[in-house]
Length: 202
Length: 405
Image 1 (cartoon, each protein chain N blue to C red):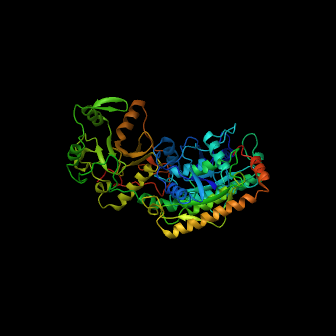
Image 2: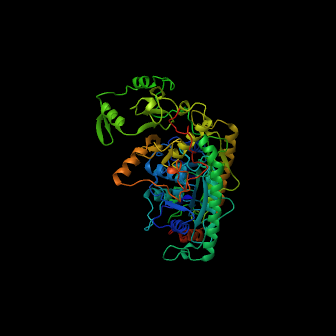
Image 3: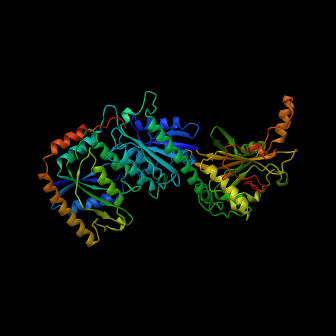
C-alpha cells in the first residue's frame, strides 16, 4: 500500500483545507495510508550565514523522503499560496531536497466559488523550480469551492459529483505514483543539481 | 514626491536591499525614498491577529502616507520570498494601505533571470482585491548577474543599467502623480462625518443630537467626576484638576474622535466670546451635524480629516479669513495616535496669534515692516506651505473650520 504525506497549507485552527485532507485520509484508507503534516509551527523562512534549517523542517523532510507521494491542500490568500506554505516549501528546499522527483497531487479549498484556482496554478510553478523539482501530477485539478458548505457533520463531502471527481483523480494519482517509480533514471543527477543550486544572498 | 521602498528579503545580506538603497540615493532630488525593513514582521495567522502591532502599523502608516511604493523582490522557488508575501497578507487582512497605491516592482538575482518569475507572481498578488495596488504596467527592471553589478560603494557599475533605471523611475513618478490625482477625489469623500461607524469608545443608546448628550452619555458610561482620581500617562489628577488645567490652557481645545464625533471642548468662555463659537449642546454631535448642509465646508472638513487619518500630514493649520490688524486667529488640526500608532481622532485648537506676536515684538524691541519680496497674500500666507498640493489643500474659507457651525 502506498504511503502518502498530506500537507495542510494553512496555519489557521479552522481550515477547510485540513478538513479536505482529513476526509481524503478516511475516504481512501483502503487504497493508501495518508499522514497529515502541519506546518503551523515552522518559523518564517530566513537565510542565514550558517544555512541553519529548523529541526521541524528536517523531520518533515524525512517523512516526505520516505513517502511514495505528497498531497498538498492550499488555501488562496491574495491570488497566491499563503506565506506560511511558501515558507515551509522554502525550508524544505534549503540544503535539503525531499521533493526532487516526488509525485505531488495539488488540491485546495476556498469559501468562494473559485476553489483556490490561482493559488494552485502558482503552486505548480513553485514546485517546478529547480530546488524543489517535484513531479506534479499533470492535467489534474481539484478545486473545492464553497468549502464551508461542502462537508456534512461527519466531515464527509456532501456532493456525490465532487466525490466521484476526487475518486477518479486519486486513482489517477496512485497510477501516476506507480509510473513515476519507473521514471528514475535521472534521479541521481536531479538530486545533485538541486543540491548545487545556490541560495546564498538574495 | 515621497516614496517608500520595501526590500522583499529578511536575509542578513540582500542584494535587493542594496539595489533599493542605490535607487534611494540615486533618486535624490527627484524623489524622497525611505527604505523600510520587514524583518520583525510575525508570521501571518488568522488565529493570532497582530494587525495592531507596532511593526505592522508602522509599515501601514508609512505606505499610506507615501505617494508610491517600490518593491524589490528576490526570487525563491520561482516566486516571491515568503517573508514578502507574509507582509502583504497582513497588509490586506484588516487594513488595506496598498489600496489604490501606485507600485513599481524591481528585482535582482544571481543569474540571468533577475527575478522575472517572482515579479510576475508579485504583480498577480498585488492585483488581488484585498491588496488592490496599482502596479506600473509595461515596465520591468530585472537586474541579473547581481554579484557583478555593484561597486564597493553599493553603486551600480553599468551606465546603461543606470540610464534604464532612470527612465523607469521617471515613468513611475509620472504614473504615481496621475494615479494619486485620480484617487484623491473619491478617497476623502469616504470620510463619514455622520459618525455612523461605531468605535471602541462610542457611547451607544444616546442620541447624538441630544442637547443633553454629555449628561446622558456620562450617566450611561458611569463616567467619573469631581474628586475621583484619574491616572494619566505621566501623572495623577482628579477630574476637577484636569478641568482646571484644560480650562486655563490658553487655547480653545476640541476633541473629535476617529469616528468624527465631536466629544469635548474646554468650555472656558461664554460662546459669544470664543474664537470658534461652540456651544455645550453641540458636544456629542457628529461633524455632519456641526456643519449642517454646507457642502463646501463639508468637503474641506473631509479633506482635512482624511489627510490626518491617512498620515499625509500630522498638522493642518489655517488662518481664519477676516483677520485684520487687530487679531490673527489660527485654527490647528493635529492627528492623535495611540501607543500603537493607530489614528485616534483630531485635536483642534484655535488661538489668536496677534497678542503673542505683539508680546514678542515688545520683549525683543523689534517691529514688523512689510517684506518687499513677499508674493503671498499678507493675511492668508502665514500657514501656506510651498510644497503643499493644491488639489488637497483646504482653501482658506470663513466657514471652513471643523468647529464652526
